[in-house]
Amino acid sequence: MTAQTELNIQVDTQPSEERLTTLGVKSWPIWTKEASQFPWYYEEKETCYLLAGKVTVATEDQTVVFGKGDLVTFPAGLSCTWKIHEDVRKHYQFGD
Image 1 (cartoon, rainbow, N blue to C red):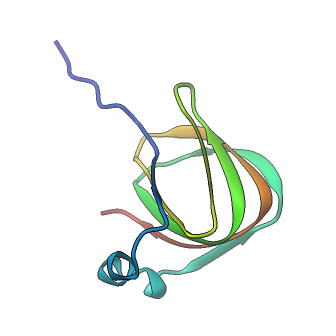
Image 2 (cartoon, rainbow, N blue to C red):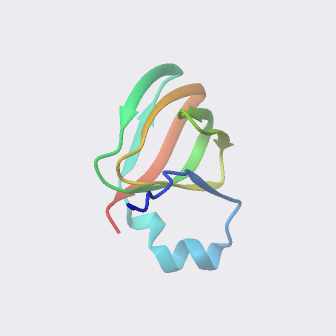
């Protein structure tokens, strides 16, 4: 029997400054995108911290809404659809 790992998006709502500092978020690159909708596949884990915007991301099993001030982790192997409601500006990091 093969164990299957669930591909869940994790949202840390309004993490502490201490946690953001520990992760080094302010040194991560910044990505921006206007309001839009598009499919996406994560070849590797991504962690991002939203500086601005509001987004809904949907998978077959989960729909999450997040925005400014949220720290979000997407697992490797995840297929989803991004719907950006308000222009996004985020710090991001791929890998562990």
